[in-house]
Length: 195
Image 1: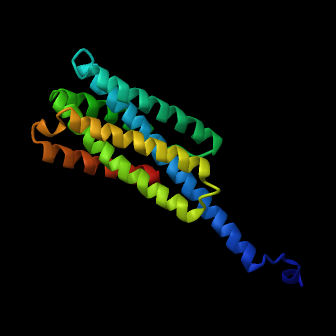
Image 2 (image 1 turned 90 degrees about the vertical axis):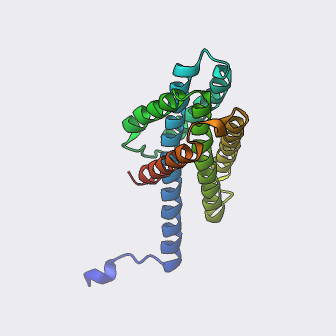
Image 3 (image 1 turned 90 degrees about the horizontal axis):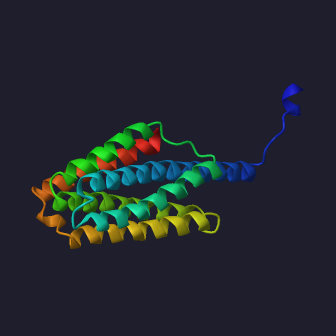
């Protein structure tokens, strides 16, 4: 008799609840990883500027850093607004981002720009993947987040092109350097999505 008193939820409601849960998890993952990525980017440009701020490329780096500050501020707000859990690795990305920016800047402006090209290529692809995921899930429901991600993707691709325009390909060991940075960025994205 006790089992007959259980409330039964129709399958279509379960399906709707499952879709809502999946959608919520998608948004949480996107906000968590993008917040971490924008913190890393902020710190990369800060590291580059610490080394190259008084050179001819200093104003270019500063301009890109200003975009990243806006991106980070936006994701700081989205973390709170959506009650998304930030990655536990923020302290690591804080240090690693600055070290990557400063380290590549020590190779000269070409090294810094090679870093920019590598990082922004990965982030541009990553944002495109997120746009596809949000469109598949529910483009109307995610309209605001899609608008933000598309804008930031365009900014990142502009930074990529700026890096190429400022001699990134003349960096020492350009292909190897950019490949190592890309692998590191992809790894950081993957792990930030998880924890």
